[in-house]
Image (cartoon, rainbow, N blue to C red; front, side):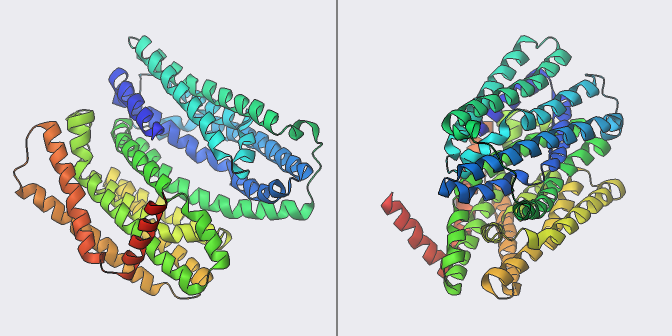
Length: 498
């Protein structure tokens, strides 16, 4: 929640002081560096997994060896990111449509690149031991403190240098480097004090077989990561290169809201993976399937309702409450954003079971296929069909629905439940159709009801429709199912215990 509030505050000041063109440049380079972060290749998560057992046994020598492997890996990753990033410098004009004269793009790009490299070189790797040792709250405190300090510094300099937009943007970008270095060094100091043996225990080389197992997990995780980042970032790069950075700036405002919603909902569901992992190890098939049905209904209900709320409130919030109507995208683009959000998240039950069961290696070919389909369709829809922003989103949605959702469901049902996923997919398609129907009903009611013309009053009236109509309709469709009854009992027991 803190990040959501800070993001909105910073974005509001940024647009006020610098404008949409600068916002588009900022979004473009952020997405380019997201793609470059593929060099990390899942090493962090793989070593986190490897740390669980030695931490439980307090095997200090093994922990020190793994952390040394992590440190060396991240040092060379930083070199790789820096090298690849510098090699991309001559191609920057190809990534930005139009003549951007507000700033020197090469200087801004190098500042973004150094921020990314700083995260690898200045101690950030050390935080993995806190996460693996179930002390993630300590990491979160440090990360949030660094983030808030960065937001305060950026807002302060945006205001102080408001009469010099280019210089203000350079300083804004450079602050990211300072924050990353400060965060990394403070984490290094804290962890070395808490785990003193890391300074005194000599790190011995890991056995060849153990390294082999770690890097096999790295390959499986990295392919999954490539797929995810391609879907989330390449579309923005295509928008900047083909449509323009101003349009990317407008789109990034919608992304900011979407990111805030995803952050809140991810926090709601984040605790499920560990519980599912335990269930996969100890529960019988019927129990696992029953819990899956509950989680699936919860995802469909929560994300379906969120999608309808976004469709109803997106433009009224941006145009009347937060910014101005000049910052709005066309309804067709907003619809594409909402469809992408719904299709990406609605099969979360499958993804939770996939992650809990550790089925990363099994989906390696699916990840490659989804990348190829996503990039190919994005270029087709934008360059040939001229669908603009909506084209990149529909490309990502199709790759998710026709490749990711189908194949991940097949893998999970085969490996966890030992059955076919056909019935689940048909049920899921029906659920998505219900959500579209409910969205249509909500839109029809908005057109028929005499709503206030005042910005805030109209927004509140639309929010009331978005709150009541979807939940009432969903209850009519799913309120008498076994999964709903079980879920209701589980929530009641949780609230009673709390």
